[in-house]
Image (cartoon, rainbow, N blue to C red; front, side, top):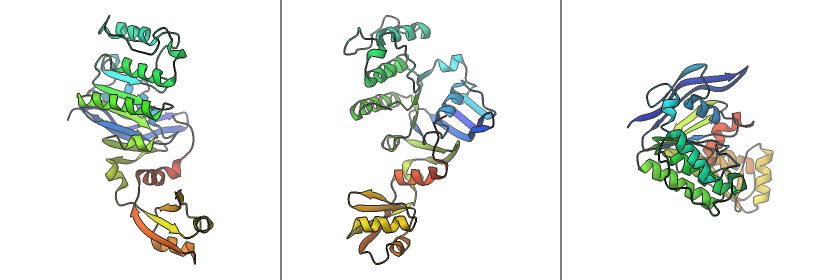
Amino acid sequence: MTVLARACAVSRSFGSFLAVDRVDLEVEQGEVVGLLGANGAGKTTVIRLLLGLLAPNLGEVALFGEPPSARTRRRLGYVPQGLGLYDDLTPAENLHFARSVFGTNIGGQDVVVADSRLTVGELPLGRQRQAAFTEALDHDPDLLVLDEPTSGVSPLAAARLWETIRDATDAGAGALVTTHNLEEAEQCDRLVVMAGGRVVAAGTVDHIVGRARSVVVDADEWTAAFAALQRAGIRAALVGTTLRIPSSTATVVRGALGGIGARLQEVPATLEERFLELVAPSAGGSDT
């Protein structure tokens, strides 16, 4: 498969703050790569490095096999967190402006919205994101770069946007999507998990979860079991009336429960549990 974007051992500092530390990443044709991490993990900085909007302090980045430039960026469809639209123009006017910049499809089909007289700033967020996606895809890009593309929209609108992403990759484009939404991450072909500016895991969901296990506790009195685990310093999540304890064993959990009646079972960990285990030491902060 053709590699559309690549970062090799890329680092970037802002003063004394190391925002990105020796990150490796590739996006190939026809795949969706999810850049997954909590706020402050360095996802947006990696995007800006790949686009050539920031220069790396160390390492190399390439778009379509060469350094990022205005010419290579013409082959991108980019939706930043701020959407990149002019709030005082209608979606159709935004699209017409983008077409004049790219020199493509001038006079073609306009964006269809509920009321074409409304400016972007007057539209709900879901409609704004739809307009941003339409503009990003209008020139048939070879690579989509989407920074938190479904943030703040309804589940239905998010599902429709993901259909748009899949339609583009099925047609041969690649997509790099930043997210901290674990359900969305599971829709990606591969994941690159970041924490504290570093890549802490990469691969498919199955590869990242690997052999990680959790303990499920079905207790006669779940409140007493929860309190006992807390006293023992063991983190537990309540799912219905059962407890899930990641990164532990039934023997350890049984010891913490003492004489509390409970049925214990070791099961495969979920992506969320594995993700929290990977990022816990570096959690916190705002995204950079």
